[in-house]
Length: 280
Image 1 (cartoon, helix red, strand yellow):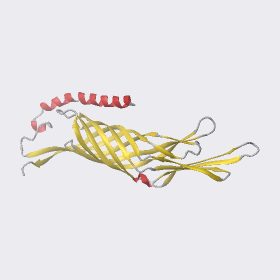
Image 2 (cartoon, helix red, strand yellow):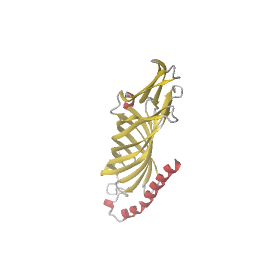
Image 3 (tube, rainbow, N blue to C red):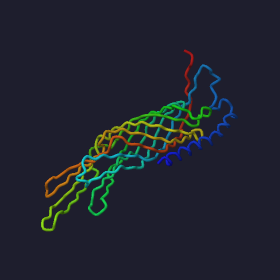
Image 4 (spheres, rainbow, N blue to C red):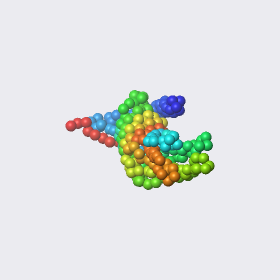
């Protein structure tokens, strides 16, 4: 696990180091075209760069499931890792802070196992994809290269709005059979009903992002996010019957905390400058 996380970070830092050579070209440009010099024409005006950007991201989401009751060890639960992707549109001020929104395919799944009595369980992947609109804020806390500023560390937070999070069924299954000796058999039945709930309409997010500038207007980032949602966005209700009499019941549910790890590609669509007077 540590190797899979460490190698992408080393690759990103290598890319950032190679891009330092491109900064030498700025030295040979006229001052009016250089981005690494201060505004000398109007010394009382503070110049800040602004940009409108688009981004494409993807990675893996780690969902965690809980279980209330096991129906006499018939029922089991497993955590689930799912691929996610998204697109973003954002506004950046002076590479200090940014706000963005967009679209995120947000998977909410877990794995349910039911003992079959044959040496291996029945296994079901249960869940749905939330169509989510993220609203995020990012702030730079550290420049890893103080001279060229090609690599930076950001922290941020946001809100995730699940546009299709409603109370609806996503999975139903019924198991029926017989138990006991041949002279007196008992009928048994196990039902499982799984639901997506309205609790997925809103969630909160915290994130860290390691961003590297490859060329002017093109950035690559590695990020990690922690999502906080109400417990039970996804829920399964299971009931065990014997001879039409309810014997036991259990519930499987999605826990409220999940994690996203992935890669972000950012492209500047438009760039300009904002001036503010330093004279009061």
